[in-house]
Amino acid sequence: MSRLDFNCRHRFSSGFEIDLAFEATGLVTALFGPSGSGKTSVLGMIAGWLTPQFGRIRLGSRWLDDSPAGIHLPTERRQVGMVFQDHWLFPHMSVEANLGYGQRRRGSGPPIRFERVVEVLELGDRLSRYPGSLSGGERQRVALGRALLSNPELLLMDEPLAALDEALKLRILAYLERVVTEWNIPTLFVSHGQAEVRRFAQRVVVMERGRAVAEGTPEEALGQPTPLGWTHSAGPVNLLRIDGARLRGDQWVGRLGGQEMKLPAVHGSPSHPLFVQFRPSDVTLSLEDVRGLSTRNHFRGVVSRMLELAGGFFVAVDVGQTLWAEVTPAAVRDLGLKSGSKVTCLIKTRSLEVVG
Image (cartoon, rainbow, N blue to C red; front, top):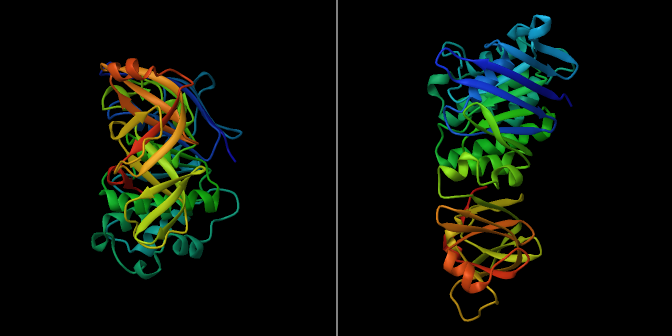
């Protein structure tokens, strides 16, 4: 698996400056941050459209850019596949021809089979159609297939889910996960959505004003108080993996680590893990497991972190995964909350949203 090393500085005529260094060594690394933080410009440098004024970019053993040595490899020689928010398909070419264009730009290494790409992305009955007759999700799958068929050493994905509604976003995210698993291609994923980053990426670089303000696993990087996902919104996102979802009587249930979670209705018969999303403000903390409540989900855990932000506290509770609760300073004082406190997290089933 190729490793990406990025260490570049570039100042634009507007005065905005990117000064960023990071490594991408796993399958999926996310660049996370709001519009204007420089994420797309970083992809442009890696793709070769923007030449950094100073710095180096290495992919595996190859230098894509090395300003001291005067190296700037042309885009067509970089072996980098791109997937955009706006697809960039050729409107006058069929799906099959658009996919074939990727093969014309194929890099070195064992070729990715056309038939397998069509099968994995479920495009077999769309090959003769044209982009104008496709849905947004179908066009995104074609764009992904074209990028794959160029046999890339690295995939760059620039907000590929941003233009999709929530239901379609989940479907496309499942395709992205399938592609990464099938072909084992390192991927740099640009997004400003916490939930999709937490689900899809193994490592996150949080960007603000052209610089990294946090880096690490999704929990480490997005669990800091400084990233934009906190300071510009209501706090962290709870996105928990649920295994073994099944219908028991009239109630859907699943496993959160060694504890059972009651779920809202789940469509179909899922054979893969699901994810549930909910707000920290939907969580009530108790020092004891309270009985006789209509709230169905009670999870025992231990407080691992407490962060004060915007006049309140975000409390991280280890329940096998990290679960965030939002509480008032008075509640912290009255409950005597501190790291190591044993608590029960109470969550109403109707507060949960199944997102995968």
